[in-house]
Image (cartoon, rainbow, N blue to C red; front, side, top):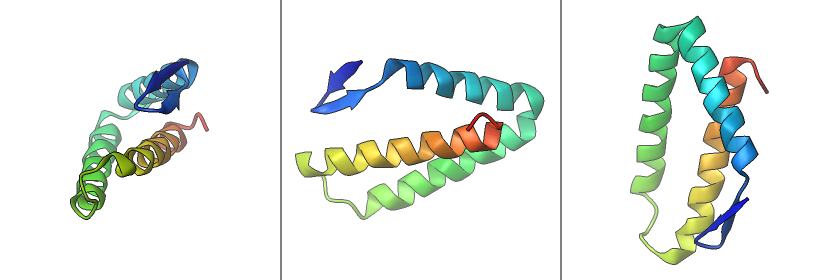
Length: 78
C-alpha cells in the first residue's frame, strides 16, 4: 500500500486494473479506445466543476476508484 496525499492506494488493486486494461485492449482495441475516451471526457466534465483545493483530494480518489471499477467491468474482470 502507498499513501499519497492522505489517500491509501492499494498497489495490488492497481495491478489488477492494469491487467483489466490490457485484457480489454487485447480482446477489443476499438472498445478499449472508446472506453478510454468516454472515461476521460467524464473525468474532465466532473473535474471542471470541482474547486481546486486539498479538500477535493478525497473526491478525486473516489472518482479514480469509480473509473477503475468501470474499467474492470468493461474488461470482464469485476
